Image (cartoon, rainbow, N blue to C red):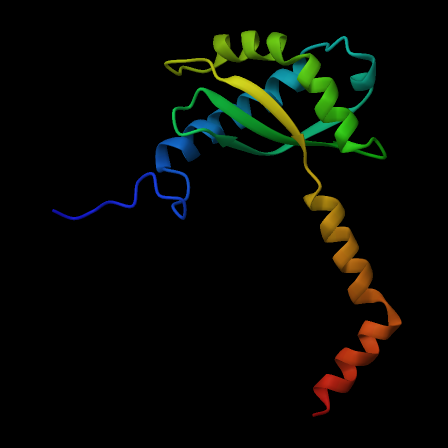
Length: 136
């Protein structure tokens, strides 16, 4: 018998986890866009859900969120965390999963990291080094 890599530390998420997480991501985007969330930190804020990761049993999902504009992604994640019961209720009505997962929200800082890398690459010092490296 072959030994499957299922459950080993180096193994990535299963196809089932990926499909369920993407289903939840799409549903969360729709719910957040159409519902009037009463949290004051979410008033007038456009929220993006960049990724959702599912636990192996699909009972917990972590959504990585940020805002379009100057709002701190940590503030958005905390505000959505306060609304998680409401969002979970709406999610249960819109997706067909055996269990409605508990929702956890984390700030998505990947956009900030990408912007920082762009700034570094645009700096005169790096441009000079890149030009010098091409002459070798």
